[in-house]
Amino acid sequence: MTRLNYEDILHIYKLISLDKSALEISNKLNIAPSTLYRLIKTNTEVKTITTGLRNYPYKSCIHLLACRKEIKRCPKTCDRFVKWLCPKLKSFPFICNFCDQKWRCPKEKHSFNPDLVYVKRQSRLVDSRRRISLSNKDFKTFNQWISPLIKNGLGIEVLFNEYPNLFPVSTSTVRRWINDGRLSAKRIDLRRAVTYKVKKQYTYRRSPSYDPLVKFGHTYGQFLNYIKAHPKASIMEFDTVHGLATEKKKLLTMYHRKTQFQIGVLIDDIKESNVNNALVYMQKLLGKTFPSIFEIILADNGFEFDGLMKSSIDNETGQILSQVFYTKPYCSGDKGGCERNHEFFRYFIPKGKSIEHLNQVDINMMFSYINSYPRQSLHWKSPIDLFKNLYSIHTINKLGYQKVDVLDINFKIKTT
Image (tube, rainbow, N blue to C red):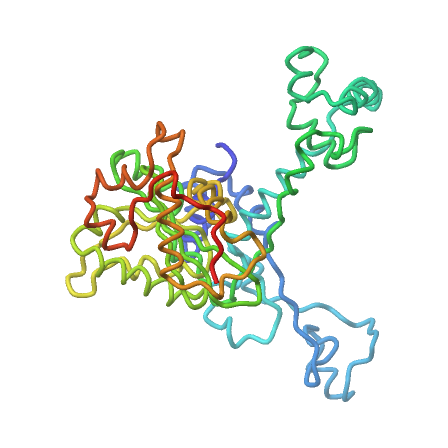
């Protein structure tokens, strides 16, 4: 089979939670048992015992009880040390995630997190492709040819178009070599590259109590299958925008993919409860129109969106008001429209600037400007006009937005 994707890894985790054997999981997903073993063992995180006043240096030693009868405390070095391993870890699934004694066990724990596994595997895949596949001689020859031309201001794509036979790799690989410092030409020699920051490397942050299975059946793969079966469905992409890292106030954005219409709601803090309250507020505000607008919700894996599935169900009738799905871990491009549209908000509030002084009236004014701005991708129509044609002017009025003439739009307005 092809390389395991995020849905496959999460499916494996789900089957392990159901106490399925390695053979049953292998047959279910059509993979070799050795592949399954390697996936788990290679990506298992071992949490060692923390040292403290009541811990011994060799607390995981099999001779600990016998030694304690003879000595009060273990020495700093011991030749008798033999690491104790839980018998359950010696057989499939080799992890402690679903052990009944996990929270009471004082020994080291072996954990498997499908979200973290996916991120690590993607990182390893990228690193493997960074290796130079050319011989030293061929690489040196290519470097001596292309680097002087780049330093003279010629673009990599232009050179590739003129001399494709002289390129042993793609243009994107050449750019990676330059960013990694492998070529004589440097990043500053590229005309436009210096104006773009290198992509930020995110760190994985999740509480130990987080259960990845809450999103089983709501992954990006299921999202693609759903919209394939419902091509006319209305999709709302959710995200949050931050001001200063030290302030609590955040901006929750909801982006209508078809019309590029975006809603902004200020929340007091980036918490699951605040996002849920904002969604419930939208349900009450829009009434019967809500299910048709928020038919599908696509959010990233931020902890603030963990409760969207629960809050998208009507408490009185039990009706599912929105189908909630989540992007792949750390793949913001899965909802690129929402991310891209934040550029307009950054005209008002650049990155690193505070939003603490803003109120909802300020946000409504800003998004009235943003939604009234014509887009080439919409054949020079504005998002607010397209949204009005689908859901009426009354819906826009309820949201607190209004159409602004192009000549009256001011992206440099200052708020106090």
